[in-house]
Every structure is written in C-alpha cells, then in structure tokens.
Length: 514
Image (tube, rainbow, N blue to C red):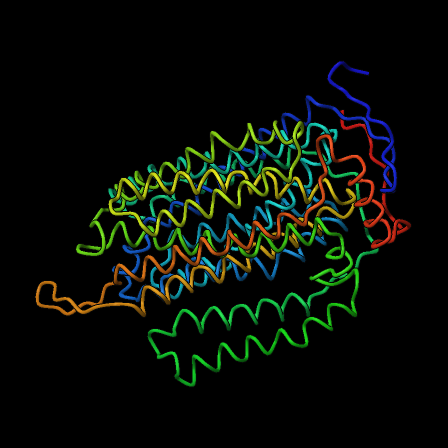
C-alpha cells in the first residue's frame, strides 16, 4: 500500500465495505472540483451587479429582472432530484459530465441572448448547473476518510468564496467596461476546459443504486408550482396585487402543493421529496435551514445591489464596478473563513458553527437595515458573510456525514432543492417589495418610481428574521463530529438504517481508487 493511502475501519450500519482511500488522487480531484466551484460561482455572481443595467437595456421592471435569478433556481430545483437520483443509479461522474455539457451549452446561449425573452429562457435552463454541486460534493465525500471530510468540504466552500471574490470586482469591471455579455464570453472556455479535465481525470463512483426509481411527475409538479408562485410574486407590483392574473398564478401554484405531498409520501424511496430521508433528523434540519437562509440571503443580496446603484436620495448612484467593489468583502470573508471552519469542525463539532452562523447572519442583516452609508453596508455585509460561511460548511457536513454513501447523490440533491426553493422565493419577494414601496421623482423630464429607503429596510429585516428561525432549527440537529458525536451519530446511523433499505440490489463495494 502506498504512503498516501489510508484504510479506515469498516463502517457499521451503513452497508459499506471497508474502503482504501488514495489521498493523492482524492486531493487532485478536490483541486479540480474546487476550480469548478469557483468557475460556476463566478459565472453566477458576475451577473448580479449588472441587474440594474439589464433592466435598463431591455426596458423591464425590477420585478421582471428578478426573474433572471428566480427562474434559474426554479428550474434547478425541479431538475436537481432527478440529477442526484440518476447519479446514484448510473454513476455520479457520468451524470456530472452530462450536466456540465448541458450547462456549457446554456451559458453559451445566454452570452449571445438578443432580447430579454431569450435571456430569460436560456438563463432558466442554465439552472441545470445547480446539479453540479451535489454530485461534486458526493464524489468528494466518497474519496476522503471521515475525519478529513470537513476539511475537504471547507475547501470547496472556500472556493465558493474565491468565485465570489473574482466575480464581483472582476465581473463588475468587465461588465462596466465591455458589457455584461463579455463576462460570459470569457468564462465559458474555462467551464468547457474543466469539463474535459473531469472526464479524463475523475474515476466513476463505486457506489451505485441501480434499482432506484425516477419521479418525473413529482419533479414536474414541484417545478410548475414554484414557477407559478414566483411569476405571481414577480408581477404583483406591475399587474396589481389584487388582479386576477396575479392571484390566479399564486393560488394555482399553492394548490399544486396539496396533491404533491401525499403523492410523494406514496412513492417513498422514489420520491423527489424523500420523506424516509426527511425522517432522519439531520437531513431535515439541513433542508429546513437551507430553505430559510437561502431565501434570506438572496433577498438581501438583490436589495443591496439596487441600493448601491439606485440614484440619490435612497441609493448611492454607483456604477457596476463600484458596486462590485463594495460587495467584495462578502467574497473575501467567505474565502478566508470557510476552510478554517472545515478544519475546526473535525475538532469541536458541527452544531457550534451551525448555531453561530445563524446568530451572526441575523446580526449582520439587522445592522444592514440600519446602515447609513455605503461603507457601513460593506462592513455589515462582512459580518453577515461570516455567518454564511459558518452555515455553508457546517450544513453541508451535517448532511453528508449523516447518510450512507450510496444515497448521497439523492440526499445532497434534495438539500439543493430545499435551498433553491428558498432562493427562488427570495428574489421575487425582494423585487416585489422594491417595486411596491416607491415614490415618484422627475429625472430629465421623465417621472420614475425608485424604491423608498423603507423598502430596503424591509428586505433586510425579513432576511434577519429567516436567520433567527435558523437558530431555533439548528438546536435540533444531532452532532456528527467532535467529542459529542460518538453516541449521537450512532443514533443517526440507526435511524438511517431503519429509514432506508440496506439490502437494495446493485450496491457495489468501494474499490481502491489508485
């Protein structure tokens, strides 16, 4: 056996055979997936400072431009469970390759969108890229021994911060100087190159569950319900909150959830919303936190961009590049904090950072509501970013360390679904608030209706409230690392074994990766 291989003891209660870990290979893959995470985050965040510019370019409203963010996550929400299940059935690397190819095509189309309708359509289908992360997280989890998993997840989360750190100032500079589409032209070749490298370097996952069944109907109903609610919220201030189209969209969307729940419960293991997995406490805690913090985070971020770029007296009149610079502390904090948190989790446990992240995030967004200058916005956003870094790393570790390897594709995808549900609601809620609470002002002889200062405060207060709820939910999680983990994790494993069928056919033994 080579020096860089570790052989852990057989894991109990998971149906997993003894595995030999090739750490040199695992570290190479970690670097590759980290670069992929940074590239995808760059592509997604670089568009955020350009939202007001896109609004003016295509002559749409704030609520309509918010669809660029929300429909992206709606489609990602609908397709993610299918992607995760396919990864468990046919191989995570194989499905990841197909997702990356599809994502590259959609990014290319978005970069050449001639009008707002094409932009919305291509950007929506670009949501397939959200399936990259659960598959990548699952592959990384399989390649490291348990005690090194938090460090690996911390590295991936840190590279999210690196993507933000590049996407905000660099993306803003490019968009301000050459137009927002140029960012796509620059980034697309990197995604294509990383796709080729993953095909060549990464080996297929040894864990399979070929007997799993697909829930196409559930995914379709979930996606349709979210899309209708998001469209209703986005157009409420434009069509009128009491208008028949708005009320009809929201009502029909909510009604679709009524048959979805019993339908999913009847499907059991095949369901998009796998209630057997949701009975595992840590899975449920991670998913609920994902919903509420995802909503609060995206709601606040969209509001910050418009506040920085909106003209006085309620905004600061920054251009895209200056907005990117003031958002840069968010990225720097994520980059600096995430990896050390991954290391510390192995020693002190997950729950401390889960709870602390919710507390710090709530404080940061409360302070944002009281900010009186652009500098204070950057400072308070930095505080909120510490909480977000804590939450991202701890939430992901709480999840992947609580389930069996052959189910990680499904479970991490389901977590992405819940997180995306929150994010897909956050953007239209922010757009609706900013479009509803307005005042009239004449600019160059034209009457415009910018948001009031109170509108921005409302969005930050709502964001803070979501993180307060996160504090309560975090207390319910069971520890999976640190001194308290042994007895608690034994209970989690037993619950997981009772909630899933360990004798499912087709589960292959782990093999030496070297």
